[in-house]
Picture 1 (cartoon, rainbow, N blue to C red):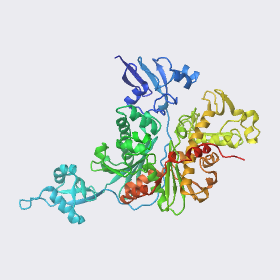
Picture 2: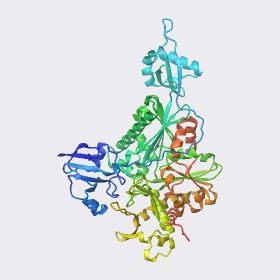
Picture 3: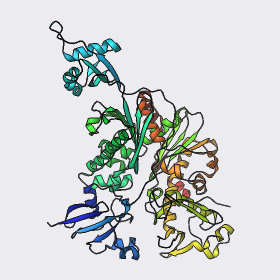
Length: 612
């Protein structure tokens, strides 16, 4: 079989690729982080690249997803390009893009009580009269200091003779409860660090923390490299089903990202990797399974059962994470197949289990997670919102990155803001929400989500914008931006339908939980919006569209990356980690698909609230 040279711009990396290989697979093998939101099925049209030299014929799917100007400019879809000769391609999605990743989080006080502790001891030296074994000497010294018997972890025992003699029989023991996990020459008790990770479907955030004080030393973030296998959890589960090495590829991608982030975090804080002894991890159930290398296949099949829901503790060496070898990884528990450790962490941070007031917590994303209740009772569900909030499956959609329109205001004239300033390249989910809410209030779309004929618009607000209603592919669309030399950015009828499906999923989840709990909107004292999308959306737009019950608009509070806050609590405190397990067990999971009224509720939730 012939091999061909494939060169990637702008970095200039060059590799050999076999005849007929799909460019998507070449990109993944090289390890370049490049988004394939639909998992490379050729349906979303987002994996745009420019073929600089060497190309084959456009695929039929490309002709429908790319404009004539794009086709003339050499734009192709990486998931559909075959390597049939030497290729030079420009990775457009990698160019000058900075993604907005939510770092801030809900904070609350907790008593610091680390999972691992250090004990400095001065060990009696052996003599002809006292020839006790090395471990016996260490054990006796520790028992004398703490008053409790101890045992030793095998890897620590292997290093004990050498470490004990490096600094004249003075060592620091690293203990997890009564088990010595590591021994270090001299007195290293001053340094005990940990890092908490929130592994999202799209982004990963890490918080390097001093385990003695709970003080945050640095915060790091990155896009989840698993996006190269699909934007959502279903696409990634499908990848494990269709490829023998799929699960291993996904696990290696996320572990590699965490290892890189640990390096970034310690560099920012001016400390050493070897000072990191504990790692806590949260994520939705699929991310949890992929991180641990557990097959998530059963999550895609009814009745959507996770492999495990209780907390999992793993040696760092088992996951090949480059920190202190005595370290441990503490993974928070799941609640159900699609309500994961991330929601447990949010509940932990928000202390819903101790709240006298009823609160509604919504983490809006591809898989929306919703919780409702108080210390009396807690309910949770997951809502398959799809990728619309992330900009996928939207005609001009993109993530919250440089060039994305992130907010739209319908005033005397239309106002938009663009992330990073400059020319607009597309719209992200928050702008989609703003636009459709504005169109609804202006009478330019109906409660059913259908564009009204601009010639029939009589609403005074709508008349200001009727000229922006244009024809696109035989249907109406709303023109957001048409700058000279720039891309025409619009919201199409199909985009509105995608938003209706997404908002309908979340709204129906909220309604089912209220039905199950016997609560009404009037009973809810506060709505807590967690996660990146919840932090950036305009609550008014969300309530206008019925994503959140409109009567709750004045009770909405953004709580930032509460999952990260919960992960930090579980990192610095054994008690909080144990409380997370108890909290997860207290939540009653509600399977929306099993609700006999769900189809009716979902259908009605897709409608927009009346504006009269």
